[in-house]
Length: 208
Image (tube, rainbow, N blue to C red):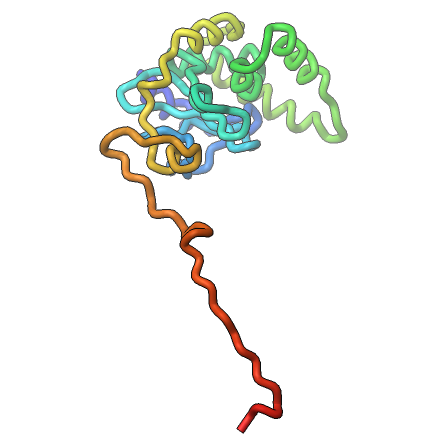
């Protein structure tokens, strides 16, 4: 269902970047903390934060390589794509949904208010694209805006990150012992491996 819905979403021909769901093609360029086998949903276009689907899972996950830490780099933000999109409709952007994991409710509400009050020269065209994208999604999937805060918090509190599969790069970057079957890449030589070269410079008088 979720993957079929993702195809329908992309077929709408709307500007998803206006909703913090930038589409950079079907190929995902993974970050060190992007789980193995992840399928791209979109990214907010900032700090490497992106949304993915994982193998055999209907849920939408947020990957945050910038602010995340062990246990929070990858967290669910929707039981399926439709629920996730209903959260985006409520927030009018995917960015607030990506930040729920570290926010209390006041911070979250303040962020929504700040976003709603944002204004800059030429913003009318941007908001027109945003409104068109939101309306198209609501109509295509028959969705209404759904407040994400409590549901996402509960979903993330119940989530066990040990089910995630990471590449060798994840363990290498964080200095963690990899699980069986994951082999770390060879390291560049450290100080103890450094080879010292001694150069002897000759003056013109030494030249033959």
